[in-house]
Length: 545
Image (cartoon, rainbow, N blue to C red):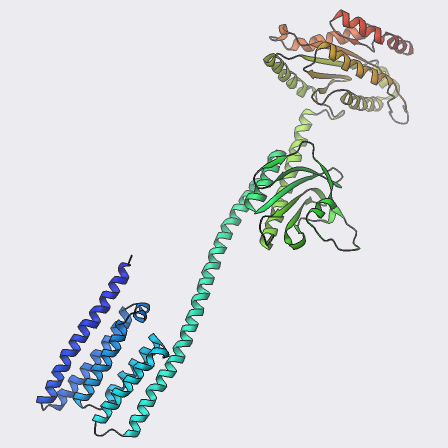
């Protein structure tokens, strides 16, 4: 499809050539008639000068109006040069004017030919111009052969000089165009890079607002593989001491994986994954890793430490998805990702600590009564919905006031801490233990009938009885016992779930009243077995008290 502006330019050129040559042809006939039949020399000279300048105007009009590239490629400009040589030469022959008058226009023709066609083609025009000028000069009686030779030689000198000048100009123009193209391309790349950087840093800024650890890991994996161009990425979380790394998530660019039971690695293992070369004879210090990403051999893999204030919180191990490996800008971006991930990780840990402080008992590390109450309602609703069994244990330390009075409250606190750990070891991961208040603890046993709840309770009672608690210099060895009340959720508790807790408390009171160091439930048959199992130890304990 031809552009309308190009078509318009060609129309102007066609008009200039056709009408210009027609006017010049007619005007040449008028001059010929004036010279042949007229006697006014002044009129003849004036008409001749007008013709020459008309031809010059035509040349300038064509150059200004026409696209130079189209003129160089078309035959029209060649015809234009030929017509000028012909008309100017004819004018010189029929008018008898001084050859010096038309000589400048011959130079212009040679100059224009050298610019448009170069030496390879313009030497033909120069040859024809030389012959025409020679013919015009010879027809003029006053012309000297010496001057003619000098003028013709100057025509060729102008041709050679113009060719050298224009070749350098075109070479410089070509280099300038290439430089401009390269600059435009680089500018375009920079604009794209700027847009990418804005997207990346906006994403990294939003990363710091992530407060859930699993969501944070997912975002880091997605940013690494889908935004920063990593082929694979692994996220490691450091242990409290900082010497071990736990693989908590990884991605191959298609699928993200999270690990609840993460595999353990050392920091050196992670560095070896990227083939990082450490300085020989230099002692490795984890806390001196800093925040800058470390490239491995051939830049194919990268280790990004997640460190802050001299503490290593974790690390990223990424491999490049490109044959040439990671670039300098990508390394810088991963370092920025590491800084943002560290801030986000600190925020998540701070949020976890805040949440734990709200639901964790500060002394024992168990859940507090508030969390236990909410969790009990949740488990009761689940038991009702799915028709599952549910039991709870209420545990109380026997004669705990005597322990405090004898050894002090500090010793009592140490016993509570150790007892909390013992209870956690005796129950399943799905079971929920909490401090009910004072020296009382409760345990929620999902999907557990009374018979199995009693087994768990008896396990706790037995372990407590045979454990020696260490409570400092003043109480190096203290032995205690516990009483436990067991209750199972029943259908009649659906409207009043708090009755389950009341029943457990009632059975605990029976255990206390019945002699302590025993497990009691509302099932008389089970109670008798429990009491028989614990009666000997209970009597022994009571006698000791």
